[in-house]
Amino acid sequence: MNAVSTGAASGGTALERYYQFHSRIYDATRWSFLFGREEILRRLAVITKPNRILEVGCGTGRNLPGLRRRFPAAQLTGVDLSEQMLAIAALKLRDYKVTLLRRSYSAPVHTNGKGFDLVLFSYALSMFNPGWEQAIDAAWDDLEEGGLIAVVDFSHTSFHWFRRWMGVNHVRMEGHLWPYLAKKFTPLLDEQFNAYGGVWSYGIFIGRKQA
Image 1 (cartoon, rainbow, N blue to C red):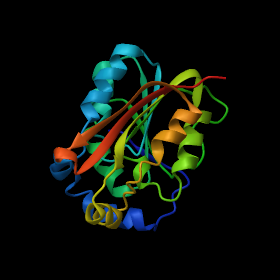
Image 2: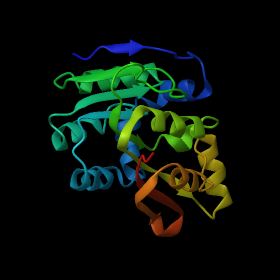
Image 3: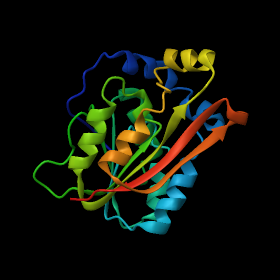
Image 4: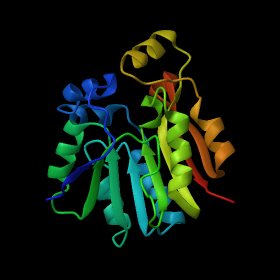
């Protein structure tokens, strides 16, 4: 069974309290609106063969088995702030060799060792408010030269009521992620998609770290 290592976890943020409840229903409910999670893994498998993968905001570990299937030789690491989400992930991944870390992601995970070839954010960055810029910067530092960042996340909505409702759920929907990602990384893929007839848009971004 995978152990959860605890790093610089704060222990009482609003987001952590939010997931104390939502961890129980996350997998049963998020399939209906967290679109693009399989698509980004499929696209990554076409363009890269990473040896070391980090998923930031891995939550209940939903994406890690998919990463293992597509990249069976890769070393996998998942990081998340929620103790409850990681406890579910540890049970779900008990038959997989995965390193799980409980900590915030305002600084790189790797220190003196080798960095990562791929850093994945799946519906995480839009919930880092504040902190999304620091997380992208940390990913830059965590990546080896030529490594890839991959992001699938909410983008924006023209409906004020929906933006407010998502704000209650700690999600910022102002299209703010994509310009910064394109500025920091060389885009290989940068696409936007409509959900539920245009109630909101989500994006998929894959970018390469260049010197």
